[in-house]
Each structure stands twice: as C-alpha cells, then as structure tokens.
Length: 99
Figure 1 (tube, helix red, strand yellow):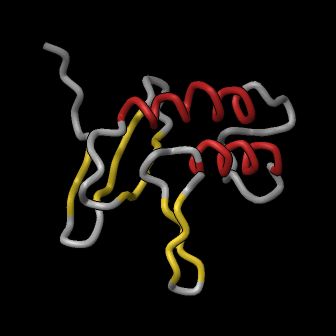
Figure 2 (figure 1 turned 120 degrees about the vertical axis):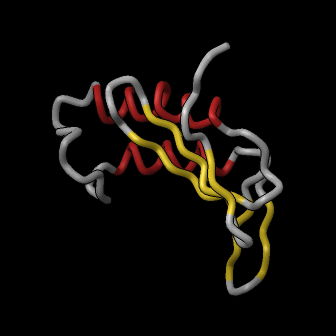
C-alpha cells in the first residue's frame, strides 16, 4: 500500500486539492465538493506544463513567484484547466461550461 499523505480537504463550500512533488513544489486547486480525487491531474499539470514551461526555461527562476511575465506558462495552464471535465467558468454570475 502506497502512503500518499495529505490529498484534499473539504469545507462546506469547496474542496482544496493538494499535490506535492518529490522536489517540494506544491500544487493546490480548489474544486466543487463533488469532484473526486484529482491527484493524477495535478501530477499531469506538474509534469507536462510546470516542468516544460518553468523548470526547463532558462529565463525562469523557479524560486521566484510565477507571475504574468510567464505568458506561455499562463497560456498553457489556462488551456489545460479549461479542458478539465469539471471546469466551469462564471462570468457576471452566469455559468459557462467548458467545451
């Protein structure tokens, strides 16, 4: 049996999902309460987007705060998140489902 440690925490409003890499990077995503375990999704976010556009980017220091200067990372992160089956966007109190 594999010990996974802290994975998520539920409140009466949202579910906080947590993933920590072996190198100490922490990824947190808030979801609706009915979303299941997304550990694999957070790992995929780390391995395919964070590593590619932050860790392997010689112009980016991973010890700095990731901000809007990392346009390609922000763009790829937005693309990744918007394709998730549980992604819902709210604009002016109107719900817009992902594609």
